[in-house]
Each structure stands twice: as C-alpha cells, then as structure tokens.
Image (cartoon, rainbow, N blue to C red; front, side):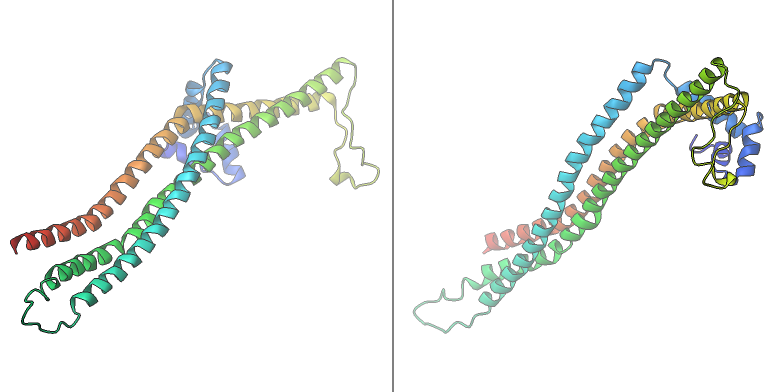
Length: 286
C-alpha cells in the first residue's frame, strides 16, 4: 500500500472538503484499497492483538536500552580512536627524529648506524598508520554512531505510533461512555441533554447548549463509529505493515552499518597492514 498511488492520494488529503468528498465516495479506489487492507489485516481475537502489542512494547524497551549503551560505546570508541591516532602520529615523529640523529664515526665500531634502517622503516610505517587511522574516528562518528542514533529515533517513532493507537482507543472508550450515558438518559425519560454548567456566565457561542436526546444519541453514535474505524485502521496498519517493516528496517540498517564501516576500516587498516608487511620483508632481506 505504501506504493499505491490511489491509497497515497486518499490518505494525503489535507483539505477538509476534499477529505469529506473522498469519505463519501464509495467508488474511491484508494479508500477501498485502504479499508480492505485494514479489515483483512485486523486479527479477530482481541487477546492476540493485546499480546502482540504488549510484546512489541517490551521489545522496544529492551532495544532502546541496549541501543543507548551501544551508541555511548561507539562514541567512546571514536574518542579513543582519535586519541590513538594522535599517539601514533607523535610516535612516528619520535621514530623519524631518532632515525636522523647524527652519529659520530668510530673506526672500531662499524655498527653504529646499523639501527637506522629498521628505525626508519618503523617511522615510515607509523607515518602510514597515522595518516590512515586519521579516518577512523570519522568513520565511527559519521557512519556508525549516526546510523545507531537513527535506529534509536526509529525505536522512539515506533513507540509514538503505538501510543497514538493507545490514545485512539482511550478516545473510543470516552465516546462509548458518552453514547451509553445518552442512551441511559433516554431510557429514564429525559428528552434533552444538559447544557454547560458555565452557561449563565459565558456567551452561548462558548458553551454547550442543551439539545434533543435523540440528536445527542445520533451524534454520539456517529462519533463512536468513526472512532472505531480509526482504531481498526491503526491496528490493521500495525499488523499489516508496520510490525514487519520495523523489523525489516532494523535488519537493513545494521547490514548497512556493517557494510559501510567494514569498507572504511578495511581500507584504512588494510593499508597499515600492508605497510607493516613490507617493512618486515625489507628487514628479512638484510
């Protein structure tokens, strides 16, 4: 349904008049598709619905707790990576300085300068390490940390979606109670509803006026039926697409993290490993 243009047009109406026209148009392709999907997706067993909603709420709490820890750990790792990069650069500078230290000649000892080649090789590798590892904090922050923060926002957004459904059911209970009150009032012989208790202090336009009980029952019934359809639509959307989409999106997000971070780290650390390997080969040839 996310890619059905007729459904998107139906749900995307912002103008009240246009929306009312769509609601009354029983031939609306988008409205028909949406209602059919909502009805088909709604489980008939209320216990199944309640248990599924409760299970997802528990899962969201668990995921949010662990994702928060993971996000903090990645930021700590990025900080440590930045500090490590600075230390490597400083070490490279010290190794290069040492390899260039002036050595006085000593006819009795021809090995005074023999250390220079390996220390120079080490300095060269450290230079490569410093340059390449400079990218790693950015990879951790701009890619890994950002993606995890996005996943945290997705968890929060999904919790808001469940809360929206809960709020619609709370409103349904209120409307149901109101409808029952009007029906009971009719049975007891009342012919009109009560006006606002502030009616004697405020203008008529600002307070609820008494109206015939039959009209009140009809209005309450229309509001109740409308709210019931909204509740069904919310539940249907969750069971039809949102539950599955949330799980699929989470899996895709972490696959993306592994792919992008892995590619960056492989390039960075691969070049460093190659530099160490070359330096080792040069030492062996001596």
